Amino acid sequence: MNITEFHAALKNKKTSVKETVVSYLDKIKKENKNLNAYLEVFTEESEMLAEDIDKRIKEGEEPSGLLGVPIAMKDNILIRGHIASAASKILGNYIASYDAFVVEKLKEAGAIFLGRTNMDEFAMGSSTENSAYGPARNPFDPERVPGGSSGGSAAAVGGGLAMAALGSDTGGSIRQPAAFCGVVGLKPTYGAVSRSGLIAMASSLDQIGPIAQSVEDAETIFNIISGKDGLDSTSTELGDPSSEPQKRPGRQVAKIGVPKEYFSEGLDSRIKKSIDDIIGKLSKDYEIIEISLPHTKYALDCYYIIVPAEVSSNMARYDGIRYGMRQNAPNLLGVYKKSRGEGIGLEVRRRILLGTYVLSHGYYDAYYSSAQKVRALIKKDFDEAFKKPAHNATHSVAGGVDIIIAPTTPSPPFKIGEKSDPLSMYLSDIYTIPANLAGVPALSLPIEKIDNLPVGIQLIAPHFKENRLFGLGREIEKLFK
Amino acid sequence: MISKEDIEHLKDLARVEFGKNETEKLAEDLGVILAHMDSLKDADVSGAPETARAIDIKNVFKKDELAARDAEADQYQTAIALINAFPEKYEAGHGTYLKVKSIL
Image (cartoon, rainbow over all chains, first blue to last red; front, side, top):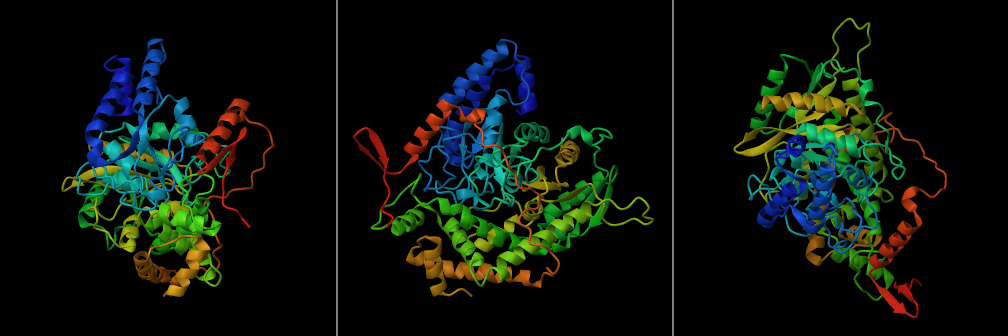
C-alpha cells in the first residue's frame, strides 16, 4: 500500500493508522532478522503516535500529506532522543540532541518513524556490507546486496517493511539501492533539501531524499522536506513550482536526451535492452535526441578524490572526546588514534587516509585541485546538454534537451562478498556520480526485472527542475502497470 | 605508488590506527586507487575554474538573535543531552565534570 492508497483507505475507514503501523511492526519482527534493514525499531513510540493520529482523524482532520505515514529513517539522520550511529561503532551510543531539519518537517506533517535503518558506515559504500552491524540483504534475493549506502532504507521499502523512507545520496546512495530493491529514489538538486542534522560525509555532494513505492509518493515527501533552512546556508528556496507552465500533466518535457557515454561498454546488455525498449515507446510522444556528456569518463576519478578529501576533514570530529566511543591510552594523541582506530571501520579509515594524502603538500595540485577543475567540466557538460538553442538557430542542434535518460546501475544487484576490492565497488556508482558532481536532481525508478532481480532507469533534470523528473517518471511508471 | 613510510606518516597526520594486516592491504589498495585516478591527468582543465560546489552560493549573514527553537527550556534539555553524550564524567560535590586527558 503506497501513501496515496493509504490515505484513501483511511478516508474510507478501511484501515486505521494504528492497524497499519502494527502490521508493519509485525512484518519487521518477522522479517528483519533476515533482511537486517533496521538497526532499531521504535515500536512503542510509533504505536502511541499512531493512536494519537487516529484520534485526530476521528475528530475531523483530513488524511493528507504524510499524516500517519510509517517512515523508515536512515541512521545518519538525527531524530532527537534517538541513537544516530551512521552504522559505525564510534557512534554506537550517540544520542541525537536535536532534530534534523527534514525530521522536523516530517514530524510537523504527522509522519511516524518506524525505526532507523542500516547503511554503509558513514554512508561510505555501495552495498551496505560496510555496516558495523552486519550487512543488510536484498528483499528479492537474500544472497544479494540491497545496494548502498541507503541499503537498509531501500530494503525496508522494497521488502514492505516501511511505507517510505529517507536516505542520503552523495554519489548514488539513494538511487542505486532504490534500483536494486525495486523502488523509487530521488536525489534532489544540491541545496533543495537542508543538510542540517545529516551526519556529513562529503558536504559539497551530500543530499537527503525520499525512497518510496511510487513517483507520486516521492514527490509528496520531497515537497514536504525541501526548502530553505537557516541552519544550512547552502539550502535554497525552490521558487514557485507553478512558475513552469504546465503544458498538460506530465508534459513539462518535450525533448529527451540519451547520453551515449552511459550506454557503452560496461553496461549489462539486458539493462540496455530494457531501456532501449522504453525509449522506443517514449519516442511516440517525445523527441529523442542522442547527446554527449564528454567528461563522463573522468567522473569516477574526480569523485574519488573529492570525496576522500572532504571525508578526511568531516571525520576529524570523531575523536572520542565530546561524544561517541572513547578508548583510553597514555596520552591525548593516543586516545585519538586508538578511539578512531577501533571505532571506525576499514573503508572509512581508508578514505580518511586517501583524503589526507590527496590534500597533502606536494600532491594537492595533481589530485584535489585538478579534480575540482574536472568537476567544473562535468557540470558544463550538463549545462550544455540542457541549454536551449537560440530562437533563430536554423539547424537542429544536439542539446537543448529537457531531461536525460540513463541507466541507474551498470548491473543488477550483485552478490554479497562479490566485490571485495574497493575499486570494483566504486565502479558500481559510475552512472550516478555525475549528477552529484553537477548538483543536478536525478530520480531512479524501477523497470522490468531481470532474472527476478530489480533494476532501475535514471532520469536527470536541470537544477531545481524536480517537477520534470516526477512528470516523466509518472509516464514511465504507467508503462509497467 | 605510495610507500610504507608515506603511510606511516599519513596515519599520524590523520590520527588513525591500522592493524598490521590492514596496513599491508592498505598500501596495495591505495596504489590501485591512485593509479586509476591518474586518468585525470588526461583531462584538459585549462580554463576550468576550481569548483567547490556545483551551485552558486553566497555568504549568508544573519542577526545574532534567539530563534524559537532555542527557547530556554529547550536549551537546558540540549545542554543536558550534550553532557550525557560525553564519554567520561566525574561526579564531585555539586557538579558533573567532563573528563579529558591532559593537553600539556
